[in-house]
Image (spheres, each protein chain N blue to C red):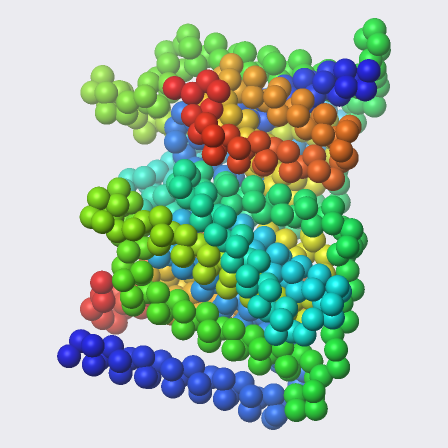
Amino acid sequence: MLLVDAVIAGVLLGCFYAAVSVGLSIAFGLLDVPHIAHPAFLVLGAYGAYLLGEQGMDPLLAGTLLTPIFFVLGMAVYRFYYVAFEARGSDAGLRGLAFFFGLAFIVEVALILTFGVDQRMVEASYIGDSVSLGIVRLPTRMLVAFGVAVLLTIVLSLYLSFTFTGRAVKAVAQDETALALMGADPVRVKQWGFGIATATCALAGALMIIIGPVEPGLGRLYIGRTFCVAVLAGLGSMPGTLAAGIILGVAESVVLSSVGASWASAVAFGILLIVLAVRPAGLFGR
Amino acid sequence: MGAERNAGGWLNFIAGGAAILAIALVLTRTIGNEYFFFAGYVVLQFIVLATAWNILGGYAGYVNFGSGAFFAVGAYTAAALFKAFGAPLLAQLMAAMVVSGFLGFMVGALTLRLRGIFFSIGTVAVAVICETMVVNWSFVGGSRGLTVLHPSASAFFGSYTRLLFVVMTVLAVLAVTIARGIERSWIGRGLQAIRDSEEAAECSGVPTLKLKLTAATVSGALMGLAGAPLPFYINFIEPASAFSLNYAVLALAMPIIGGTASWVGPVIGAVLLGSVQQVVTVTVSSELNVLVVGLLLVAFVVAAPDGILGLARKLFGGTRRR
């Protein structure tokens, strides 16, 4: 019975993990940008929702309203990254990594300087409530996060498969030169894609603060979770992201209820190391 | 001719190292202000850490984000040995070197399959897993930490901080000597070949795996050495601060800001950032201090990719050695 509870809670949690990782699946999986700062942007999104929530706004609405701002932010970050590293060509690897690592660090410290290290949370009618579904009781906030997460992943999946710009983003991942020969500018397509990846951080960050309290250092834990999901998914695959998120969520939830909370944070990193060692292409790899 | 000049360089270098040790010893006899040694220890510790990072990150191009783990594993090895057997400092240092070196070897084995960002994420994973294990290890106090009281100092040094200051000076000289030795030998040239193109290096007969394992092991062992005296230095050890991300960021920022191409770079970066850090932490706040480090790191990777060394070469028009 306990196991059933853990698995159901894990599936809900896993969909949330998929939502925080779709942006990384695009930025890292499709566009090949070493985006270590992705979790820091998530926390930034959570604090954005917190700020608007203080004014009495619903966190989900706040997250949605913030997406255009994050979209522009993402485009600016990619443009900067392109000019500073990709356009110069040589040795972008080491410096690009150090750049995003430094960026994540700056975001974290800036948040500490602005808000302090205390945990922050938001208020909404569905936080703190719970719903009974037959034999198990589920917190309503998890169901809300679950619903939004699934919706976000499906919408992005459809966008990448059926719209012109979405297919362009997928195309640039497959063959940049071929895309250029078709008359499209790969840099602008990647910039657009990176903007979308960052925009998801606003909404996923709002989900993050709905699920639990947020503090500036939280991004570090999510380095493991988001990269675990993105790599396990097979880089860039949206259905894979949802499946990988659920696998991680269930694994974490089962460890949490059987071994103890202090081991749960290592689960994502453990799975990540195993996947990297055994099947780097992931479950749904190209 | 070349060999003679090389030998002369080594002679000068060893004389310089000996002079630094002598100066450190003289300082412990002359300077009265205890804070000088307290701050000096931190700067020296970062010289070891930055130099160690550079052996794998700068020479071979494998970016390690988990330096904090090697550092903390060294510190915890020392603390556990002291609690279990009351082991002397020298034994603690040796054990920390071996354990962190082994961890480095394991991370080196990761490079078999992982390159670039995958390797870096792998090191983050190793760091978090190590931290989780320590948090769940009740012998060393778990997440509450462990109080480690250092033994009383010998009459010669007057205070234990002074003794640790001298020990860290020895470690810094040792680390820099090893880094210089690697850089000037076939190992360093092999590592550089790996950084430029691992496939090409492998095809030209460079034993890439052996070199990578060597670099990772040496780098890990030195980081462990840097952390080993920490429990005695603050008389307390606790996972959150020992595994702090700040160590990982500083260990990477210092060589990149100083210049990764030569052993001088990490030393310049560590002395500069370490001193700035002491001043800013004391006068303003420690958060602002890490923000400064982050901003400097980003500014340097964008505007001056070869670090201060590269800037100096440009300014003075010196010929590039490589």
